[in-house]
Image (tube, rainbow, N blue to C red; front, top):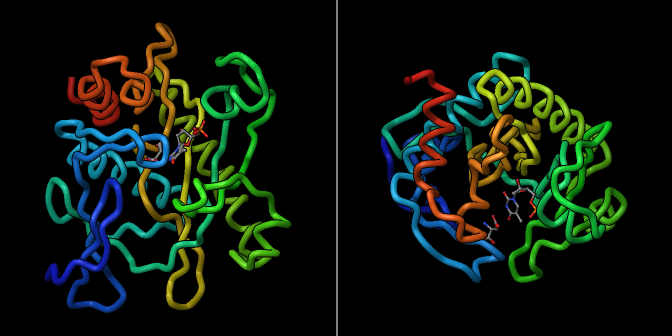
Length: 237
Ligand code: TMP
Ligand code: ASP
C-alpha cells in the first residue's frame, strides 16, 4: 500500500491518499487539544499509543460483529483504513456521570447509571460541536432515520463490548465518543479512533483517571496513564 498526498489534517490525525481509491492512511500525531482547540499541547508517544490501541480495539470489535473501517497497520503511527465519508455526528455513550454531563445537569462525577445514555453532537468546530437529538439530525439531513438507528445500535453494542474489554484489565469505562462513516456503497461502519483521547477510563480500584482528562485538567502523568492502559490491554507486564 503506497501512501500518497495528504488529504486532510485534523487536530490529532492526518489523512493521506493511497494508490487504492477506496482506502486512505490515517497518521496519528502527538498533538493534543481540548475545549474545542483552545488548549493545545503535545503528549509524547500519544500517536503511537492511540494508533495501536485503536487498531487493537477495532479488531476485537470487528471479530464481535461490529463493522469498522480498519484494514491494516502500516507502522507505529500509520494505519490503512477504508475510505468513508464521516457522518457529522459525535456519538457519546455514558455509563457513569462525568465531564459535560455532570456540568450540564449539575450532578457530581461518578454516579453509576442503571442504563447507558446516548447523545449526539453536531461535528462542527465553528459551532463548538453543539448537542442535538435525532430529530435535529434528521432536520439538518446529517443522516437518515435508518442510519441513526443503525448508529445507535452499533454504539450500544460497542459499549457492551468495550466495557467488557476494560473490565478485564481493571478499568471502568465511564464514557466515550464514537464516529461512524459511510462506505462508497452507503454501508455504515465504525470509524475514527478509540483511545484515551476519546474515552474516560478510571482504574476500578483507585479511581485514578487514565485518559485525556489528565491533560484537560492539568493533572500530570498524561503519558504514563496512556502507556498504562496500553500495557494492560496488550498484557505486556
Ligand atoms: P464530555 O463529557 O466532555 O461531553 O465528553 C464525553 C466523552 O467524549 C469523553 O470520553 C471524551 C469524549 N470526547 C471526545 O472524544 N471529543 C470531544 O471533542 C469531546 C468534547 C469529548
Ligand atoms: N479534542 C477536542 C478539542 O480539541 C476536545 C476534547 O477532547 O476535550 O476540542
